[in-house]
Length: 246
Image (cartoon, rainbow, N blue to C red; front, side):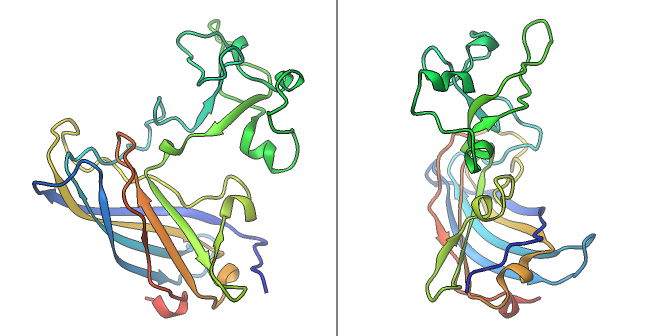
């Protein structure tokens, strides 16, 4: 039996963090699993909470993203030049040089404008403006930028006799994700001081129990630092929502 994902609503909740300076760690962050718990609230305005706590170590403390950081390299979407095929440089190239749907006539490797490809690769309302302030009105090719987030959560569920990845973006819609951001962890992001501590990352939804019922679950987690260095990936022990109910 496969999971029913109808009428699913999901939200990303609060993040709590504790950290302190500590020396002699590599600049690439490392993490370890500490805890996972589920809190049942029940109700649209007070959704249930699934929270995972991880410990971390980082040698130069370049950890965290503010919620309003959206400039390169922390932008949500990457656009491309129709001249070079490389990332579009808004400072050097005009909006008319963007790779658009019309370029499919000469570039057959571009995905079709159909199904989930629309959601994942075609932006019909990009917030892109010409120098005179008018908004571009075109369908533009893009790719989601992984560095927009810095904590990544992969759900695994055993609903068919073995664990499989439950991809929220493909099984629900492409705007559904529990990947997110934790904030900057130090008062001086340029201090290059080593940090260690813990992050409690809360995910809220009214659909957790409806979606997963009593099937066994696991979570896989990794983080990025501001330079884009990826930590190791940790995996929780197997659990059901009922078994970690708080």
